[in-house]
Image 1 (cartoon, rainbow, N blue to C red):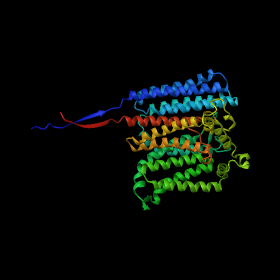
Image 2 (image 1 turned 60 degrees about the horizontal axis):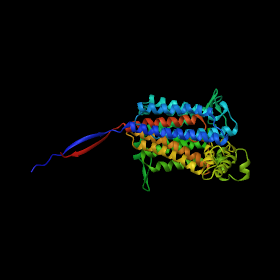
Image 3 (image 1 turned 30 degrees about the vertical axis):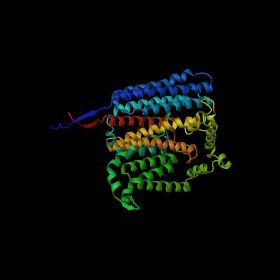
Image 4 (image 1 turned 90 degrees about the horizontal axis):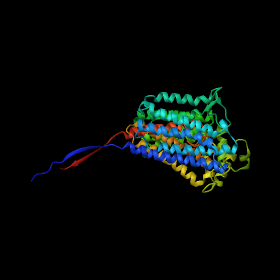
Length: 460
């Protein structure tokens, strides 16, 4: 009796990049169709006729998105097929709503927010294309982590400088150079994500393995608290110097999540939340701006709070707009979102909620949820620690920013001045978030380029 020998054969299973890109192209056509339909409904609802000039303008970013898709086929064929269509859909919906508010306010030409948003959207997509063409290996970014930290700190200091820094009633976060103005904090969050990812890759062993165990939870040594204390001081400095509670919460939340992902220790989260809560409580006692934000949040419908300068008028008007929209909304172009101050930027969620209703808002939130989930998926599947942390960081910062904005508009948390990613008017935010799209494309392409090896026993 003879026994057939068992041999092993190794098959290398490669993904089909053409399928991913074809799926992306299909989704992109749907996304562009949704944006065009929203723009048409706005014109028909508000004016009763279509504005051919506006459709011609939005053709520029639409064409650039298709160029981005073609570039991906060459330099990032394995890139995630969902992030670009989702970003395109959200940008298109934002453009349609901003155009609707321009019609209500009578803005035309370059004074119209929608025209400027089209220009910024085009710039953002061009920079995304340039990014994935120039940065072929994301690990290069790790080498420049300390430079990223230094540049981020310098950007945060810019609004405090004379001449170029703009003083605003709500927050000092703007910089004006000539005819251009931008928010440096939007770009600082990306640089800080690069720094946090690079730093935590090298320091995670001491942060995760050393410390004192209390009630089954390991707490770090005092000397290991240095990084979190530095970021806490930075966050509190943003509150004091720029009067921007939302940006401080965004930065601190970004660092805490990346720290937790790097070390797996819940004690860091507890320490971080305790530090931020303590700092926030102290700020409410010492800083009138923060105290006013909390008063508007806790007692919004008090007539005295509602009527005073810097009071809860904007918050309450937004709540009334959401209530007016109900479940299915008033319809694009048929509501009154312009009654809310800064409806095209800080309160675009309330504007969309009024005209698209709760169902429409849930669809928008679902897009954000999928976007963040895809980013986390890219991070989990990453082959290197730096790429994993960077993917989780930039994805989480989008999700946290949406939560802070929506939470403020719906009165779940105190109102802040952050913008809604991709939707709100503002070039800095739009450019920064499209750069996040480029980062996720590059990271996902690197992940999928790794072949999957399957070893099987074969009996001839």
